[in-house]
Image: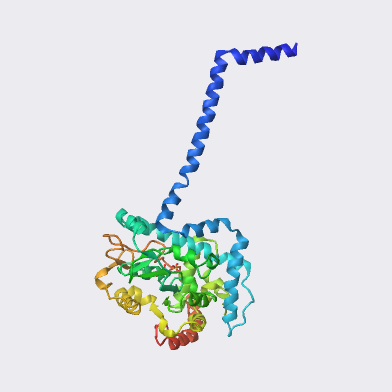
Length: 396
Ligand SMILES: Nc1ncnc2c1ncn2[C@@H]1O[C@H](COP(=O)(O)OS(=O)(=O)O)[C@@H](OP(=O)(O)O)[C@H]1O
């Protein structure tokens, strides 16, 4: 009985024209869903491909970031802390930075997102003709002859964007982080990131973390001992607050600047294991570079003067690079809304160009007593730095 019922149903499925149509509809629906799914998958890869063709291999680093977990991040951060400990002589430092503090500061992630936002705004401001001339330019890719090695939050992006106006300078927009994070990829990988240049043009890049990376001087020297190095320095107290402001913009829940500054607020002992503080001890980091490069091969640009007199600082940089002074005060105007100097015409564009919103952030108000304590802390290091460079930056 049961058997005959099943047979009857099967018979009905196979032969009822209504059921047949339903089955066909189901198959078509399934096919349609499958096609839609494939199409969405394809389209989602499109924007990243388009950015890739414009800004080169920063995508590779971004991909690496996605691939690497927290452990990898820590392993890349810790050697840098170690390098500081090696340099440190005046302070009783902890042997390694603690995990919580590394993750709090999480420089790699924060730097990259900032850089990406800046690159995107730059990309938007460029005209289509300029974009095509970037990707199809003639010439050959060369290793950089000049590098902006620091300092983080010093004004490095402004300097690079201003320099790119010069016809004899070609620079990679994104930070390659070759001599700190990507060294294992090899020099061919690094060269491939560079824009093509013609005879006589200078290839440049900027990665501000090089200045505080212990291995960077030896590695750059091994690439070429003639590499010209540029360091944009800024009052270390304002620099630290700027650094903190950047982290705060990505992680609003972090402790206050005041509480991070001290190991012990009552004794007033400064926490030099916090990177926002240690980066500003310029004299210590410079000692490391001077073991590989003579002072004459390093140019120090004042981050403050880059804002108050961009043409003046750019004049010094062009001289240092052996270039004709083409970038002059005619290239700049002060944008009242932005509160910073901007370019009348950016590279490859006829439009005025200011840096993006991640540059020139409003800083939080910091307890004046803490600021004063930091000024006292940095004073001897600043004096040493002025002595070493033969230049008084006027931070005191
Ligand atoms: N022309 C112009 N426009 C905007 N901003 C300018 C300019 N010149 C210098 N600056 C200062 O640059 C600071 C950011 O420094 P960096 O570009 O070195 O930062 S980063 O390390 O690459 O994240 C940034 O720091 P914050 O003000 O703290 O945001 C600026 O003060």
